Length: 94
Figure 1: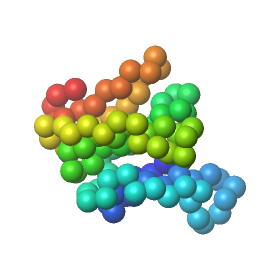
Figure 2: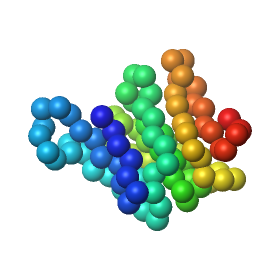
Figure 3: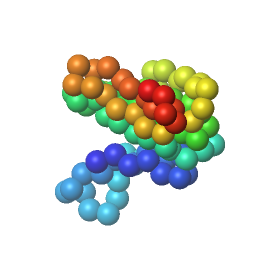
Figure 4: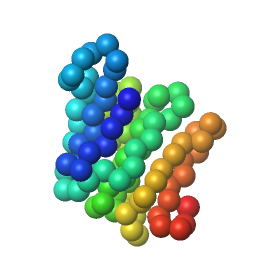
């Protein structure tokens, strides 16, 4: 399970690890995480923040940021389709 926090941090949890996250990463240092999505195959994760940035992470290579985009406004939602396409919502626009 992946969770985005108001501190800009993303934590990843597994059921058998108890009360500590297995991964803790600072995705958006200056703002809260507004959305988070992991691709169906688990290779990529996208995070968006109140800083109007969208970041795409490679989950296979030590959680490296592959792309860092500046958006016209903070995104409110993001999701990967079954075919690997990414959708991002800015208010009422996708």
